[in-house]
Amino acid sequence: MEATECVAHGMPDPTPLETPVRGPRLLTHSAMEAWGRCEVEYKICYEDLVVPTTYPAALAIGSAVHAGVEVLHHGRSLAEAWVIAQGKMESSAVRARLALDEAGQAELASSMAWDAAKVRAMLRAWLEHNDSSPRRDAELHDLQFLDRDLEVLETELALEAPLVNPLTGRPSRSFRLAGKLDAIARKRGNGADGYYVVEFKTTGEDLDAFVEAMGFSAQPCTYQSLAEAHLGDDLGPCLGTVLDIVRKPTIRGKKDETPETFEARALEEYRRDPTRFFRREVLPVNETLRREAMANAWRIADSIRRAERYGYVSKRGPSCRSAYGVCKYRALCWHGDAAGFVTKEVAHEELIDEA
Image (cartoon, rainbow, N blue to C red):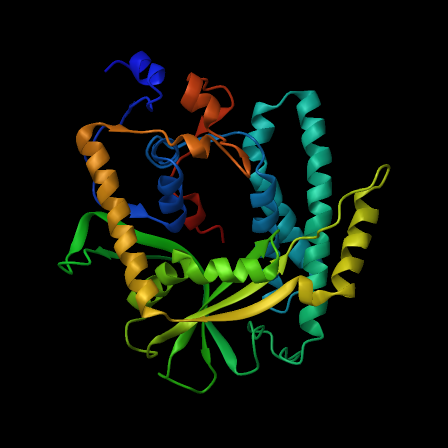
């Protein structure tokens, strides 16, 4: 059937997917989510290495707060944390700046000023909340941010592990699991009694809903498997995942308000009811979910291999427009319009060590 016939009959237009000659590829949680949303999105982003030049505001805010909190974890100042966070935001805007004219540059700068206000408020509120917490020891500056009894062993770990066939136990020759863990921690003085994977998260959702969703997400299970492959049996078993969550401000900017006054209002919102915005939750290891997550990863890898074998991937219509808006690849996918897209150097930019 020709492409025009596919459209006429309401069928997805097959997109060519050639089988490359190469070694094992990396399969991250983000890549698996992309494949789950739409096979074409996965192909464009992780095989063709094409990304939009638009400024990803939500991702930029999350990455900036994450980078700033890591600095605060080490006992460094809020000013130092903001410098690092600001650099992270600027790096998120590099592609957008290259594609914009003078008017677009000015509009982007205005938008980023409001995002920066959110980031500053979140970092200051996080520090105030944790400084006042009885679990924080002011004399310890080696990442004692979770509990007096917890010590963090390693941070910002980009790890790989074999992707194993759940039926045969044999590793895949085409894919390896990969991901970047925020930290690995253990109970102080426990030796080989076990450890935790630590994940810092920002969200715009209600915290109860977010924690519930994370409890069923494959990401904690995937990262626990990566940690086990990295550590072996030296520290004992993985005991679970510690989620350190910060909710974004829920207030909106007012007419004629400046980013500075918005920042002050956001900080006051955090101070009034910190329980709405901060949560630390332990997700214990759930072997059933772990098996399901690893089996699902294998299924996705197998689906990608099959798509390559048959020579195409298909669009998934519901993902073209969702509750989060129009798919960022729609113009390229639907109309072949490559304006506003560039090629990135690596498939999984989140794994790059920026130290």
